[in-house]
Length: 255
Image (cartoon, rainbow, N blue to C red; front, side, top):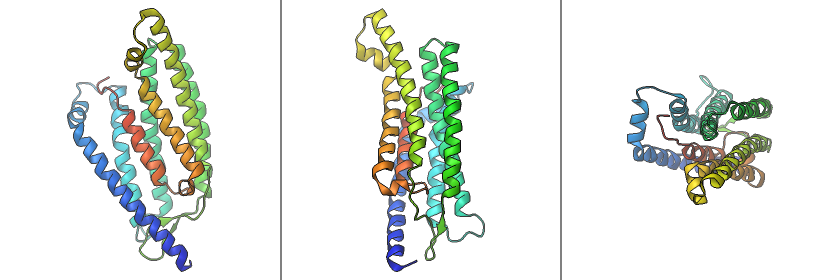
């Protein structure tokens, strides 16, 4: 590795460390702000689907941050390798997204009066998209070439690939389906009640769904236009968006 490449990689890792440290501080601060909700969610008399999904979505970012910081400071690969840490990060990210999307599904299912046909439609879409996502992730994971920095440690990759955009495209497609179903329900409620449209949108949590779709599209654009986000190594672009995504999915806890 030439000196210019080494300096470039060292600068990237240092910048990522600062960014992740700020994310940790923000995440901890946000947890303190909602500490009463966190405690009530844990001490609910009965944990239901919404509570479990909330806990999973809320705390997976902590594991993702820990794994990523360890990747940046990994001194050697005697005990654990960069590939293993990358796999752990992808698993944590997948659980975070599954929890967030699961909350969206439960909300939409409740909005439609728990109609089995709507639930079947959403679950069939999720199954198809999940299979495609797994195939894409496995392909990206096999092609990625993570290495350990010679001096100072830390995992890095010089390859750039925009295949990660496919995953976020599928996620955005599913969230678009959720929004369409919600808008249909909102329109029916608007016609039946004659209330103010904004009140109905707030009542149906439309802006939660809109935030999820917006974040997915922003990450898609970042992968397409920012070279640093095309790296197969988990980047600050994806991690930052996932943390915001998990926060936007926060439900009323004891569902």
